[in-house]
Length: 357
Image 1 (cartoon, rainbow, N blue to C red):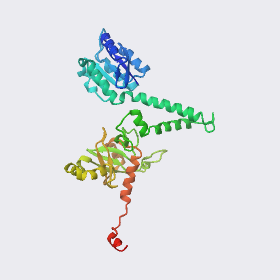
Image 2: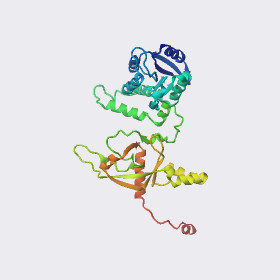
Image 3: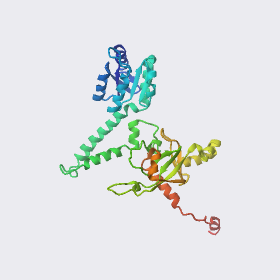
Image 4: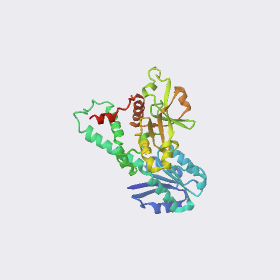
């Protein structure tokens, strides 16, 4: 596979050395296709007009019109027009270290080609550099297959001139459904996503882009996490109809490491591992529902005995963390309902039954 890298470097000697070293270089299973420009302004236009997997960017603009912020300005423009990982390759790395993130790297020119190659390899190993190209490829194939093999082939169903926006709706729903666990695994090439098991990232929608609150949303206040239990329909407000919700029902979450289950496991792994495993798999009892750790949330579990009612307007004082995705939100609500709808009865005298068989 090709890895397209754009080098924006106004020092012609350095830029030429970078091009000669990287162009057609093989890194892992990728062949680098390098392009370069000595102009920061031209670099922005190239990014607008072409798809690059990585941009390697100088920070200072030398020459008659010096600009110590030239690289920062290019990054600011990139953020507005397209997603592409950026690596600052500069002799003044200390001036941009606060920009370092999962998608922005910083390498000092003093670390040379070795340092830059290490940063490029880090982006490749994270799968971030090529995710855009893989998604675009997946969508192109889906478009080809859907319109030629479905719409064009089934003329008895899709009659020319007699279809409305339903085609677009069906296509987008098909695209959404095509992002199954197995297809995501293929797109990412991620072996950490195990077949038959749920990866923690599958639990959540992050960040939540919903204007209105929904059941399964994870919120935080005063260091305590909660999940909303009130049904979605109570939050709906449309056509002048007021919300049904007055008070909102919340379930409090407990940090796994603060629980007795975890503390007992620490004291005796062999004896208490099964109990901890059942809690993590939400099989311990319907009283608990586990929320796995991701970069934006700790390992938690909801305790449906720890409930709290708050006024709807009070929700604005909580930080919105994430939302449980389907079917996990529905599963959480089902566990809550089962827990409070259970009907207990005394144990039957099994010993008596056996003796009188």
